[in-house]
Image (cartoon, rainbow, N blue to C red; front, side):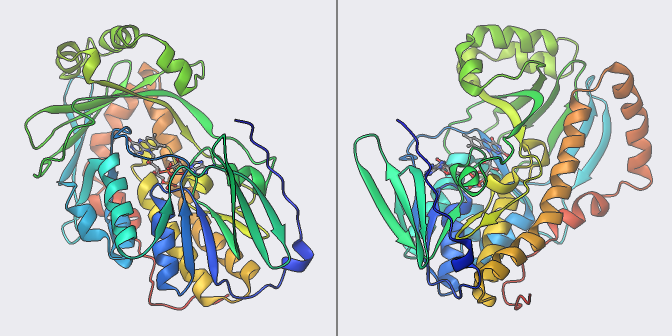
Length: 418
Ligand SMILES: Cc1cc2nc3c(=O)[nH]c(=O)nc-3n(C[C@H](O)[C@H](O)[C@H](O)COP(=O)(O)OP(=O)(O)OC[C@H]3O[C@@H](n4cnc5c(N)ncnc54)[C@H](O)[C@@H]3O)c2cc1C
């Protein structure tokens, strides 16, 4: 399908425009429906347009941290998400040989992070949003926009039919490969490859089993970083972040037979404990190629005219942060709060960006350092193994590690001022 992205800019006319009454939200993933719900709470009607039918259960597992749960609470979805997530009580950092470097329990006065199937998170959010009156149109892929003095028109093209929708504002919640991002800035940077390919193992597309996860283990294997935990049904779930110099797209990686990838991973984890056992005992059917690990570099512009970005489209931090979904949820609430409280739309979008940028960029930078640690050579790994237990005994306490990220709240009831 040909994608044409036509933009007519009318900045002079738009500058100074007041109070948004309705919005088009592009993307029905995590940020999109939550943005629409938060906008409804702010008195702004929003409709979600999603390119896919989202009926498949692909996408492995992810974590929603306490800060993400707090954002969900603002729009009444926390309980629905907690109901399909397994509480996580501690993280354990290990050497490749299984020796513990440090154990970090969840902060006792916060709800534990929830580990859940990405598809269950999507279902809970979309179902909850629809129940609260949000309209989600599936099979609507944004291909272009046209801005007018009094609104913006989005064009959707499914290959056979072209449809349009018009509103005061268009919000790009369309993920790391955002179309809206390139409509805002054709020169916007593309996602950055981290040098790691990610593979998940276990019944990753299975049904939710209630129960707790006592510990999630993260291990600096001899050649590949990996993680593992026991699912409440007793099965092993594990992943590998495998260094791979040459960048590959997901499609290119999928073109490589699974047997070849599995052989590479078995060789990479041969000297690791329990990595060796886990990767030997598994088979190709239990393997999910999650793909190249990517993050968004610093984006010069989050908005332009009547368009603005939210979630991965603006600030995908790479999965090493464990914060992709939670930051997307926070930004959804913050955007709606700014549009609620600041009538001048340019001022409102500017305020939203200034409130979000420092936090999301700091978390993304931290995740980039973690990624460097995952690709580090043997000397750096050795030093890391020596330093980490000392750090854990002295300054690296759970509150210091998790507090600033997990305690963050977008205070919905407080008024935003320019
Ligand atoms: C396939 C996949 C698997 C993932 N797996 C994990 C994981 O295992 N662990 C983890 O921590 N994080 C994972 N992530 C990242 C995590 O899900 C994101 O950080 C989080 O989903 C961000 O939410 P979002 O709403 O900003 O973006 P997304 O959840 O990516 O949602 C964007 C939505 O926009 C839609 N869209 C895109 N382009 C258009 C268009 N032109 N028109 C209309 N709709 C469009 C997409 O179909 C998608 O539904 C995954 C992301 C993807 C895309």
